[in-house]
Image (tube, rainbow, N blue to C red; front, side, top):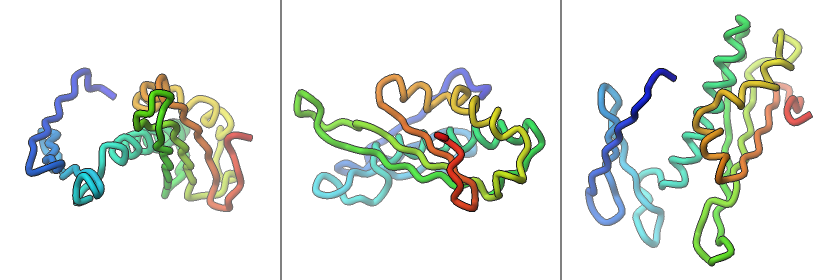
Length: 150
């Protein structure tokens, strides 16, 4: 990632709804809390965090495989975030589980073991978030063969 500074602007629309602007040519999105606080008209902050982790992991895996001229498409990533109360009774994201699924059979990809050993280390968001929230990453191929963890 070549960006050294990211600027995002949130402008309150009403109640817990915020227009989230990313600048440049990126269309804005609406963020909102689910009921009873908000109306659930857009992704919540936890959903946005989950999406950022999943998107970064997917990008990192795709980049690592393409570096070896491999085509794993179409990739899929499902994220489950566990939200609950911490020791002080405050709501927190307690853990995140990411399940990445390749669009092809593992047997069709070269250097897969090397990629699976390294791709997470290059994921900026996951490595940053993972310093405070436990993140479990699993990878499967299109035939549901578990590739990571083995």
